[in-house]
Length: 455
Image 1 (cartoon, rainbow, N blue to C red):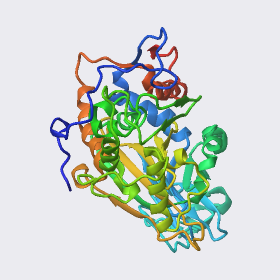
Image 2: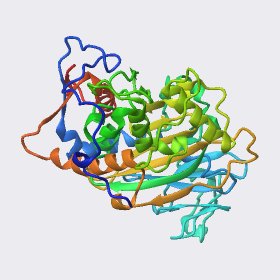
Image 3: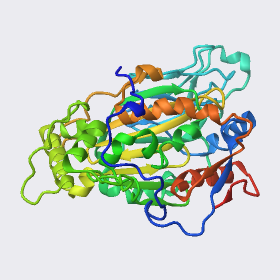
Image 4: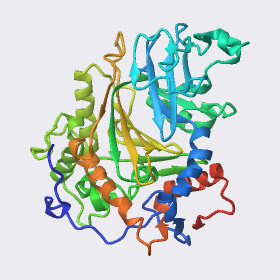
């Protein structure tokens, strides 16, 4: 893959970066009399805290397991693994998607691994107990040896399952609230983006040496743009990006096609164009970040944001995707959600990338999944090819400049959390989506009084 350049050797940016930028309801508004928020660093490193999450969080919270494109036909199935938990998602003969705990009712053997198609039964390979696709027991070898054993008494342990757009969610808690209630108000807020119009194309999994919270935190604030994503500053207002902070979830709207206020000298049109191509040039048909070329000719009265919107529309139209129902701002900008606890759906008008962080074997390990979806053409007769699932080591994955920078930094972020002098994270109001994560964790884990101070 192309190596990630040291930012110190990156091409000069337009203007200088100011030392500080005020924060507030929109990131650029002046902060009030708030104090920094402190969160215990041990939450990212402690085996005891991870064990509490294993007991009180993951078995009781809605999680994205796969997409409807992984289980689009009867007999399609997919195993979702998160930490010590494993769930089988399967589409039955009746076309209903169901989910089951991945365990045989006989001796606890795991039933399925991976994913596949054409399943007609769920059979344990250890002693051959067998269930149908609705989870009902139908065969027990050498049944007489068990005495009285009724099939109805031994169904698979069912998990709750529901969908939002292309995403399939599961919850192992039979008393869990319905998914629409859990996700509120995200579903209503994102309805204009028409999530049902997206189909999954790939899931890329990257094992990372960091806690799952370290990973999702990187997609919960834009404060770090000035640090590791300096190439974005010429075409992204990272200071005045509006945020929403709801009871469980949060939202960021990030405008593109105008420079960051952190650049004291601003940026001219060529610098804005070069920055946009360097960080997301594929959206406008310029996949070579090092060769932006001159700014395309603008139409009469067209702004840089209008130019970007037009080029995105033209590229999508060539692929059969009509963005005519969206404004220029909706086409150009990023619309990101943070859904408790571990996913961040990132919408562009033409695509949806859902970032998911799953716990690994230790508090210092996790799996980063990028669930990549594209908007279907209006006249599509089907949802296209099945998704490709790939696992790559961090050094093997080339996901473009910005994602590459995030992945490289996450490999460094966890190590500092172990230093004995570092006892608390110090967070600003700009990082309040991270604060929200921890306050909700405390509710699930039963931590009272709160260990999150300040604010």
